[in-house]
View 1 (tube, one colour):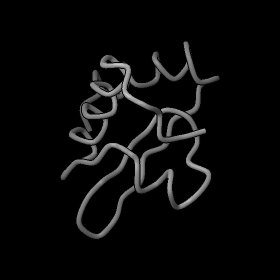
View 2 (view 1 turned 90 degrees about the vertical axis):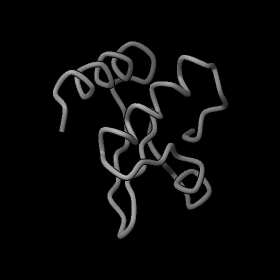
View 3 (view 1 turned 180 degrees about the vertical axis):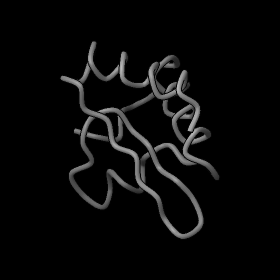
Length: 72
């Protein structure tokens, strides 16, 4: 895991999401979102990546673009 990417995610989570972020590993991919995934729909909507870094970068890009949040 790239420490700089993880640190940026922590900073965003701390500033805007009460420190919450979610990173999950599945058989074929990783998923990430700021906030806490509460249901299956949240998990389906999370940013995806083949690695944890790719998933976190995709989550950061969603945040920058102002795209709808997946977690409540």
